[in-house]
Length: 344
Ligand code: TXA
Ligand code: MG
Image 1 (cartoon, rainbow, N blue to C red):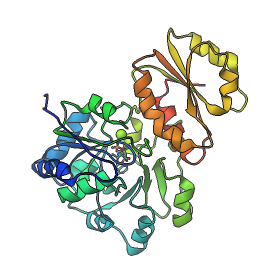
Image 2 (image 1 turned 45 degrees about the horizontal axis):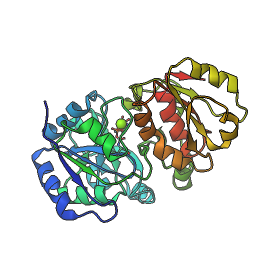
Image 3 (image 1 turned 90 degrees about the vertical axis):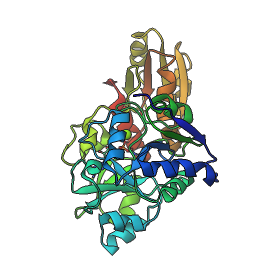
Image 4 (image 1 turned 180 degrees about the horizontal axis):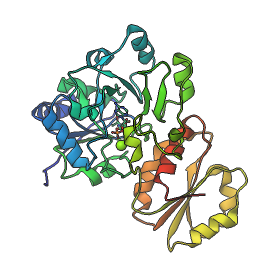
């Protein structure tokens, strides 16, 4: 079914509330609205309406056993929609608003369709001013997965989100580039120690500063088999552009011959490399592009998905250098390993 999508553009920091109002009114009637957050674009609908949430799964082609994150616009929301002690709420408050989702014991009012019938619910209070205003204006919690077609890289700019969602949703609100460009850290705080389910912009060591010891299961690094009971969404194919991604794990000592061999396998590949290695790759006679430096991993994280979507249109393979598995590097490598068809 093709929907006539209305597009609204607003300023990142000082959004024109009158422009957001129409979409916020319509979402009350079960409309679907794409909106920006500081991580990636979200595909939102009223979390309290089964009919509205059903439309999210349809628009994305998302399997119904993969739960959605509920977005709120104040700290009180954590108490309203989840069972949370004052002590836990205090710790959670240290991180929000921000690029992190807390998995908590859900209250009955959250419909089963949102949580894929789980007893827990993922709740996120985003920091992006447009997301905050929009959720506030709508007056209820907004269920929102990333606004990509299932399996594709998450959209982080207006063109990319329009590419996937035009004709599938009622409204698309766009506003500039997004700060992190990589999805929120998902952390389950229902047990004694917090468990990272998806690495993101808030690194484990930051969570440990407030929560104490954090558990990082092996699958968080993107290599091993996922514990489906713990992290339902992680078993699915993810973040993949339309062309193969060949990932070279981060190494200080580069094997130029091995990289050239892999490039020569394709007709028109692009090689994405680290600034630290630019002198080594000068002589490579293929299209190449620097992705940034390991001393600023946030900059690399913010570009990953938009580069995938850019180069899948111009090249027949994306060969990319990895980064160290440290801090936000864990999140970048999780996405790259999941997107890769070959890891070297
Ligand atoms: O940054 C983000 O988190 C973005 C923006 C739009 O907020 N949203 C996002 O949603 O990435 P999505 O649906 O693409 O990814 C949410 C992940 C999925 O892997 C899902 O399985 C997991 O969070 N998740 C959600 N609720 C959960 C729950 N109750 N228990 C365990 N995992 C959960
Ligand atoms: Mg997603």
